[in-house]
Amino acid sequence: MPLFADLAAMQARFEERDLIQLSDAGNTGAIVASVIEDKLSSADALIISYVAARHGDAAALAGNALLTDIACDYAFSLLWRSDPPEWVLMRRKDAVRRLEDISKGVIKLDSGTEEAAPRPGQIRITSDPQRLSRTSLEGY
Image 1 (cartoon, one colour):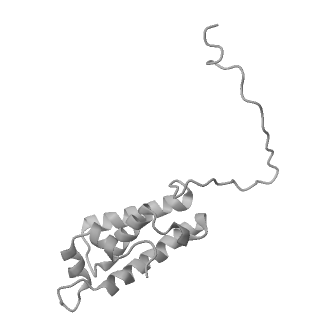
Image 2 (cartoon, rainbow, N blue to C red):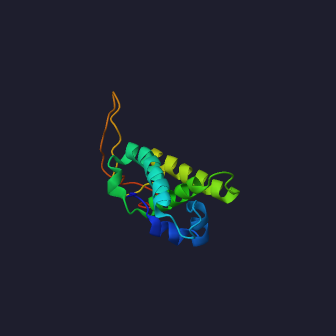
Image 3 (cartoon, rainbow, N blue to C red):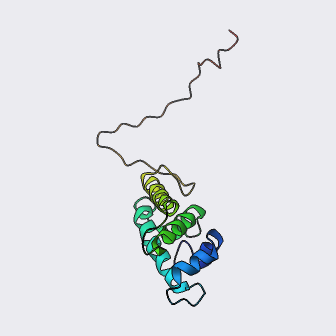
């Protein structure tokens, strides 16, 4: 079972006729869920490879709306056997770019805090708040 998106998420995002055409190799006229879930599992593997570097347990992020969008876009691009349209390729590139931004910390998936790793020879100081400033001396 895919972690970040499922068949319902794909159906909400893409036209049913497209999903039928791309998944139904036997021409039964229905969506083949196993084919789509296989592509969603591949998208999960890619997402985990990027997200785990920064967040550790990627399974804790299941249900994140951004990761669901990324999984759907990437899985949809994998459904194309050959020559996907330009808009599909652009969505795939955008999904990978967003994953790269997540792994670099440009896009945050949670509201947690992140501690910087200590550097050798690093000096940390704390100080009182600044008492004299333009705003505190305003009017003098």
